[in-house]
Image 1 (cartoon, helix red, strand yellow):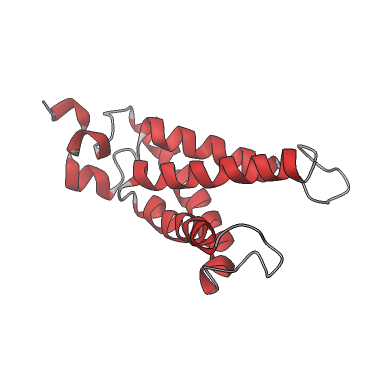
Image 2 (image 1 turned 135 degrees about the vertical axis):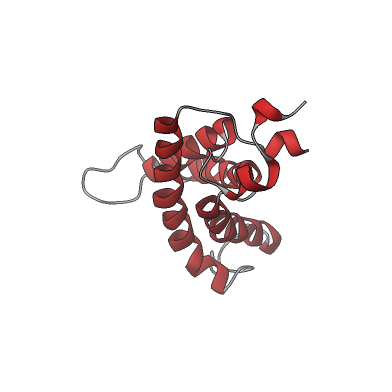
Length: 145
């Protein structure tokens, strides 16, 4: 389990890049999740067919995952939750709603969800980097056996 959370021993430039991604995207996840966490079981509205429990999981993964990602705490677990949430969002926008990847007129699209999905993949694969609580709590992978 410790190895799952321990970040890789990367060059400092890559660790700084991961920190920047974590700070900017983590803040964005918090902002996206804030409205959802206010009404976690019904943030999609009364017409939604999505069960309240799944709405709760999405709200927690965005809001709580954003906090965890900024701190670099259990980053891979937080990224996994966001990855699953964004996969559902991409599917919903692209296939259920028929939205384009990008809407030049400013309407609905699945571009933001696809970008956040990719960010989650990067954080799941790379971990939080050296500037994280994961590193303080779990060490780095180079020192684990």
